[in-house]
Every structure is written in C-alpha cells, then in structure tokens.
Image (cartoon, rainbow, N blue to C red; front, side, top):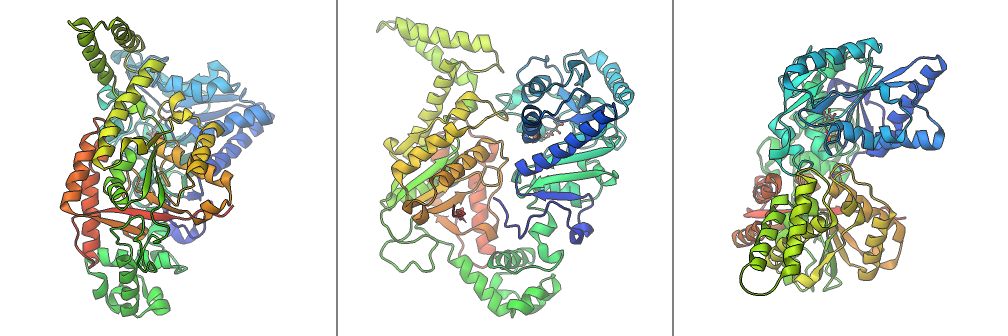
Length: 637
Ligand code: F6R
C-alpha cells in the first residue's frame, strides 16, 4: 500500500544522508520520475547533437523502464527529439532466445522503443542470446570492446530485481565483473514465470553486462516502482556494499542515483521510521506507526510500554508532545481495538461511532473489484462470505478474464477430453471435434510463448471462469453476483506490455454508474504500476475521477485489500476482520478451487494467521486469522 509520506520531494533528503548511501530521489509516481529522467536524457542527446557528438545510452528492459520509454517516444513524436546521434547498449539478454522470440529482450526493445524512434539500427547493441555456448565468451568480450569503442556509456538506466540484481548480476557477482554468461537466480525466474507461462519455461541463463561494466558508466540512474521493490531498495540504499545485493555497489559510484516512487520507498528509514531521521509531524497515522513499531520491536504489549521505552528508542519527541506513555498507549490500543469487526459491511442497528464501517444504509450495495479472478477471493474470501451472510448486495467484479494465467496444458486437457467424447460412441459431435482440433492446432502453431489466438484466449478465460464459479460458490457468492468486465487492455496485451486506454475506464465508469455502490473494495494501490493490479487500480481511480462528485460517490466508502506481495503493516490496517478456524478452513477450500494460484497467493492463509499473531502481540485479542483492509480516501474532484 502507498505509505503516507508527509511531503514528497524529488531531491534527496539531507537529514536521511546518514542512512541513504546513494542519493535517492522520491517521486509521487513512476510517471513523474520517468518524465524527469527523460528530460535529463533529452538534454544530453541535444547538447551532444549541438557539438556534433554521439550520446551513449545504457538501456534496461523489464517493466520498470516502460514509462520512461513511453516518454522518450512522446518526446520524439510530439516534440521532435531525434535519436539520430544516439548509440545504445542493452544490459542483458536471455540465453537461448532468438531475436524474434516474444520474450527476448531484443524484441521487447523493438516493441517498446526502437520501432517508434529514429535511433539508427546500426547503433543498437543487445547481447545475442541465440549464440552457442562456446561463443559466449568471445561475444561478451566483443561487447565490452564495442562499449569502449563508442567512448563508454554516458548514462546507464537500470531497474532492480528482487534479488538486488542490476542487469542480471545475481547475488555473488563481483564488483569488477564484466559481460558474461550468468545463471539466473530462482527468485528472478519466479518473477519472470508469468511472462514465460510457467517457471519451467524461463531460461536458466542470460548474458549480462557485469557490475564493473555498469559502474564504468559516467552517470547511472536506477529506477524502482511498487511495494514489491521496497525491501530490496532499502537494502541497496541503506545497507552495506555487498555482492549479495549487486545494486549496493552503486553506493561507491560518483554519479549514481535512485529514482523511486512512494511505494518503492516505503522501507527507507526516512519513510518507515522517520523519528530516527529528524523532526516528525506527529499526525495520528505517524503516532500509530511509532507505537506499533515500538511494541513489535520490544515484543511488549502496547499497554505495557513505559516512558523509558519511548525515550530510549528515539520517541522522546512524541512523548513530550503527546505523552505520557500511559496516555499514548491507551490511545493506540483503543484505536487498534476499534479496527476489529466481524461486520465488514457495518453492523446494523448499533452505535457505529467507533466501528470501521458505518451501520447505514443496510443492506449495502457492495462492489468488490478483482483485477484477475482469483485476487479478491485470495485476499478477502472470508470477508466476502460475511458480507453475503449479513445480507448485503455483493457483486464480485472480475476486471479481467485472467486468461493469461492459464497454462496451455489446461486447454490441451480440455480439448483432448472433448475429442474422446466426440469420437467415442454416442452423440454426433463433429462440430465439437472440429473445434477441439482447431484449438489444439492453434496451440501447436503458436508454441509455448506465442500469442494466444482468440479461440485460445476464450477457452483459457472459460477455464478460469469455471474455477472462479466454484471458488465464489465456496464463499457463498452466487454466480449471478459475479460480473465479468473482460477489460480490453488485458484481452489485447500480455504481461509487462499492457496499454490501458480510456476504453477501459469507460467500462468501469458505466458499471459504477449502474450500481452506485455504498461500499467498494479494491486493490493495487502501491503495486507496480505496470502490473495487472496496478493498472486496474488506476483504471478504477480514473473512472471515479471522471464521475466526479455525484452524490453516491461522496457517500461511498472505499476499502483497499492487501495486494499479492505485501500484506498490510499494522499501522495501515483500518479494518481487521477476524476469522475462526472454521472460516479459515472454508477459505482454504475456496482457494483450492483455483488451479492457477502462485506460491505467493497460496501463502495468504499463513499471512492471515500472521496478521492475527501481530494483533495478539500488541496485546489485543488472539484470533486464528485476520483479513485486513485499509481505508482509501478519495481526493474530492
Ligand atoms: C533488465 C534487467 C533487470 C531488470 C530487473 C527488474 O534488462 O537488467 O535488472 O531491470 O529484473 O525488472 P522489472 O523492471 O521487470 O521489475
């Protein structure tokens, strides 16, 4: 979730210098960071052009640089920026992939940048992943030579992997490593699994510029977006220089900077524990964060914290402003206590002053937005059941079909069953047999990585729809309460390369106006903006913005459920719905209906248990598990 950052400044914070060992610029979102970086690159290219010289750019692939590339394309198209004097070197390429392979970085670069600008083809350099193993050494040496011959890299653009890699320099890569073949880390392969339709299809090796090659660049900018990068960003920026996190080597470069959005910055000390860095504006949120942190750190229930505890852990300011400890403890304990409710839609006919959700109206029209079909049930399956039991008019809104999650083998299985039925004794099913043959042929033609044809997309969507039908029934949501939006951005795209448009926003706007809900649950705030949940959350927010101040919007309450990767921190929880052991078991049954859950998604039950443990540790009631929600406040238009 997006942390509450008191004030976002894109300049590094001098007070944080004791912690941040590489200048770190915080941006409100990836777009503003991408614009700032593109403006710097533009300046470099144009000043070099004036001098009749080339500008040498080191480029990265993956989701991170996409907004930056889109901005470069815009500058070329709308503002006449020419790339005629640019020479480019890409960081890396998967071994074993031909340049036209849908997941090769060569193809990615063509589709995301090169096909849209005037960078001369002969100036583009990308390691060749298709060459045979015995030639890789020579190829890598030549790559280094080519960089030198071009005069070295002026500005190197980087993303960061969750292993801390830059390029594909996985943990263990040395400070002086050069371009070479590398074995990809398990985490990196897991992160690429969706792109390759399964971890088993992700190449095991890649060719990458070395850490030394990267550090030779005159200027380096590493970009990171979304909460799933927050932990590694913190380690790279604030930890020691270590080959366990290649990005930490940037600390020793004289002109390296990190450009991060608010979510990727959430683990930095100045954001997470600002009282250790400098004066704090003690808003209720900050107070809650500090007290929960202190209680967790000392493994001491909130009500037992003493003045000494506060004083000895950098919170004397808070104590003198809002203390004594006793008073702060009660305030936070009560606040946390009031987040707990078994009535996520509000409890009718009772005083709701201290309840997270208002009592009226009852029943409520509730929309639960799920980016891909499994998301909402994973995060809030038990709360969905509660809402329905309590009589609310719940609609599960499946924003996309989720077809990209479904493996080819599922389709082959279905078609082969169909063929067996159709060719056995019994009904004449020639048409069905033809259909199955067509689908199997389409699978064969596209191969494991090709684009799914419409018939394959449809079948995959139906497979997931079937799973969803079963899972939502297990949460007591009748199938007619499930609304499929099949947003066009997803139907037309593939992972990391989605292009949402106003058409998507239009679909959501129509739905909202039709339902005029009293309560909305959604996710994706703080997610990587190019991920499906990040995109879906932005589409919903754009739709709300477009609708403006219609009466129902102002009265509607909005709740964020946890995203795939990051459970809510204690201080972010505004509503905690406790689960009994039976409810947790039922949620587990519901999840088992999905054949496509990732290991992270399957781990949600454990997270629900963990959330309950955290409440227990604060000295609150001990539950089996908890589903947690954060209130989202709409900025009035
Ligand atoms: C890509 C590269 C990698 C990525 C990193 C983050 O050329 O070198 O280091 O930058 O894996 O990937 P995304 O941006 O997809 O999260």
